[in-house]
Image (cartoon, rainbow, N blue to C red; front, side, top):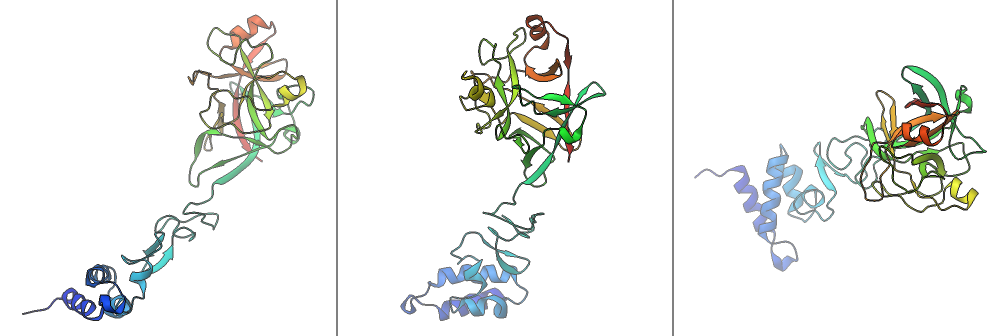
Length: 290
């Protein structure tokens, strides 16, 4: 009767391992034998020989392993929780060269926000130290510098926080309920508006308006709500937009507009202009790496 390589390996393992020796019983060794045969060209010398002694790859990254993140990648055991070339799974490489808790660190982008009316550039968002919302500047050197993160390999993201790099009045560029807004909600037909204001503490993605410190609230003593995880970015096109969430968790269309060289957001720029008579220009944003 012909004996298969696997049968010989199984017999070998079951012969060497006994409960009396304080090692796993033959059932566990059978798992090692099968795994060794499936993963190694020379399973006896490369795998099962050490397994009969409770050692080797089967006990590091095979069926008998004790650390879940150990995996056999390219014929060798590796810890996928920290291996930058096998991060989380075999073959997943982290471009930054580090792997933390089985995940590649996010990619950080830094730059400025250019403002357009149609195809015409109106300049860049810039901090206005004397007001609650950014002004427009022609100089990229005077522009507000922001930073945000995307998962490795991602080319777009939503509900992002924008950290401000050159405005010490807050940590995040968020949206803050306007001084004269009648509530925290925006909608078509309502003049309620939002400042693009420095905010001290982040709000959770998807959260309704929160009472967190903003430059407006600390400077005026008026407790107006804010949100920070409001930004969407597409790296390929550079398109940037903001998205407010109402108190009932609905997601109204948020429009950006400029008035008197300052930038606002809201639900209806026409209603805003009717309430505050001065020319209003619809605008869009573009991220410029810098």
